[in-house]
Length: 89
Image 1 (cartoon, rainbow, N blue to C red):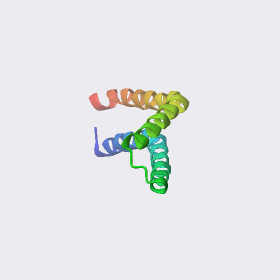
Image 2 (tube, rainbow, N blue to C red; image 1 turned 45 degrees about the horizontal axis):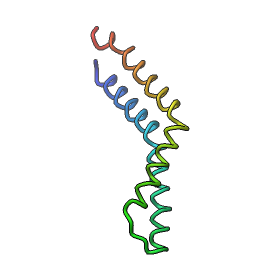
Image 3 (spheres, rainbow, N blue to C red; image 1 turned 90 degrees about the horizontal axis):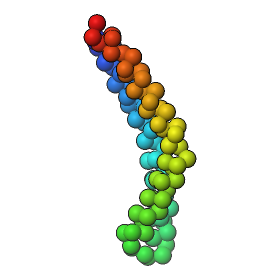
C-alpha cells in the first residue's frame, strides 16, 4: 500500500465519519442553543432540562436518518474490503 492509497483511505474515512456524525451533531448543537436561550431567559438552571431534549432529538435523528447512516457505513466497509487485495498484493 503506497502513500496515495493511505491518504485516500483516510480521506474516505473522515468523509464517512462527517456524513454519519454531522447531522446528529448539528441537531444537538441547535437543540442545545435553543435550550440554553430558554434557560437564560427563564433563569432555570436545571441540568436535566438540557439533557432530555438533546436525548429526544438524537433519538429522532436516528429514527429519521438511521437507515441512511447505516447505508453510508456499509458502503464504506464494502470499499475497505474491496481494497484488501491491493494491500495484500
